[in-house]
Image (cartoon, rainbow, N blue to C red):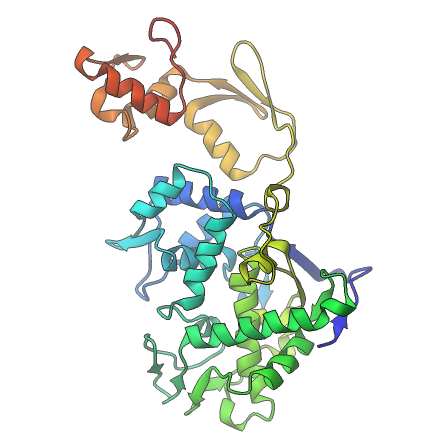
Amino acid sequence: MVEAKPFGQKKEEQYQFNGQQLILYDLMSILNTIKNESLKIGVAGTPTVSASQKINKMLMGPDFFSAGLLIAGSKAKPVRGFAWMVLLKTAGLIAYQDDIIKLTRAGEGLFKKAPTVQTIKMIYDAFLGESFSDEALRIDTMAHIKGRGSYWSDRSGTEFTRPADRRKMVIDALGKGMKDIQDSSNGDSWILMAEFLRYLHVKMPKFCVAEYLGEMTLGKKEKLVSRLSDRWDCLEGTYVKCLFMEYLAVLGLLEISYTVPPVSTFISTYDGLEAFRLTELGAYCLGLTKTEPSTACIERTAEKLFHITPNLEVTAVVDHIVKFDAMMMYSCMDKVNAKTWQLSRSKLLQLIVHDAKTKPFCSLMGGNQLVVPLKTEKAFKAGLKKMGYIIQGQGEL
C-alpha cells in the first residue's frame, strides 16, 4: 500500500473531516435529543430524513455535504445523523417503539453519566458484528433492492453476503495495511483510497458484496453490474467508501478527505472519498494499540463559553453557540438578548417537577412554588442530588 503525501494547498471543493474530538459531545447531544423529542422511523424501518436532519442539527460541525447541495441532480441526503441512529440501535442504546425512537435502559444509563472511550469501542464492536443493517443499501443508484436479513436477495435475484463478514474482512485489511506502512511513516500519514482498495482486493480475494449478482444495476444509467469491466471498483469499492464515511469516520476512527462526487461517473454519494488516515481512537478500537487515547484527543478543546454574573445572568463570550448548549440554556433560562440569558425560577421548578428522579415526591403550586410533603422530603432531596442540585440552608436551592 502506497502512502499518500499529506494534502497541502487544497482545492476549493476538497474537504476534510475528523470527528475524534467531537465524538463524546455529539453522543451526549444525540441522547439528549432522542430523550426530549419525538423522532420517527419510516416505513422501511429506518429513521426518516426529518429525524436524521434533526440529529444533524445537534452535531458539532456540518454534515459531509450541505443539505441544499445537489449531487448528480438530487439533494444531498443526511449522512452523519442517519449513521448515528444505526450505530446506537445496533449497540442497544436506542429502540423503536410505536414508530418512535426511544432510549433503552442502557441508553438512559449512558445519558446519566459521561460516555468514555470504552463507550465508543462498545458501539464500534457491536456494529462490526451485527447483520441487521446493511450499508450496501446506502449506495444511491443500486436498483431493485428489497429485503433484509443475514443472507438475502433482491428482486433482481442478487444474493448478498453477510454484512458482518464483509466488515470483518475490510477491518482486517485495514489493520494489516496500517502495520505495513508503519515502518515508512510516522503513523498519521494519509492513505489514498484507491491504493487501499487495490490492497484489499489482493489481501482479501474472497471479499465481495454479493455472491451472485443477478440483474443488479448501478449508476444513473442503470448499468448491469455483471457486465461492468470495473465491477469490483463500482460495487465493492463503493461499499468500502460507504463503510468508511458513514461509520468509521462518524465514530471518529478515521479522518477523511473527500470532494463532491463527479456527476459524469456518479455511482454514490461516497464516490468523492479520496484519502483517509487512522486516528488515535481508531488505532485503539482496531486493536493496533493497547494504549487508550488521552482525554485531550477525544474531547473538544476547553474554552470559556459563558460569563456568569452575581444576579445569575449568563452571557456568551463566543460568537457561535452550538445547538446542544443553546438548548440546555433555553430549558432553564429566559433570553435577555442575543448573547445573554437570565436564570428562570419558574423554568427551573418545571424541570424539577417533571424529572423522573423528583416527580413522585413533589408538586407545583402557583407556578413558582414547589411543595414537598414531609414523608417524601428525604427521597426528594436524594433525587435533587442526582439531578446535580445543591440544597442550601433551610431547604433553598
